[in-house]
Image (cartoon, rainbow, N blue to C red):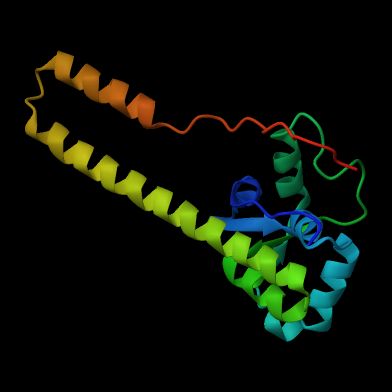
Length: 171
């Protein structure tokens, strides 16, 4: 295999769109080392395997919002068609459509990234719940303790992700 697939690099390609964690067809194509057009053609040839809850086409507004979140376009300029968004189930189904060793390795890395993301979210929810329980036990007039709780909540907020520098030779 030409490149090692790193779970952390996959995690950065997971977005929350329409209330679902998804990956874009353009990012998936890069991971699978195929052209986006080839990936979508394979999906369309097997349309019965990809119901609406497995994948959907992004609207122009959703594409504009995604592009506005990045200083430069992730998709390299003007595009003819909007990318598709694949849910975790849709990505799992891709492994049955793309039959290559690379597809298997990519799917394993992606599934691990989704599991890790679920674990992080679960831990964060548990911590927030415990913090709320503890705070409710504190008398409302004790402003200093409330200030401590607010400071802890600020520290719990996720930091904006900074792009990781690439190391080594990249063609």
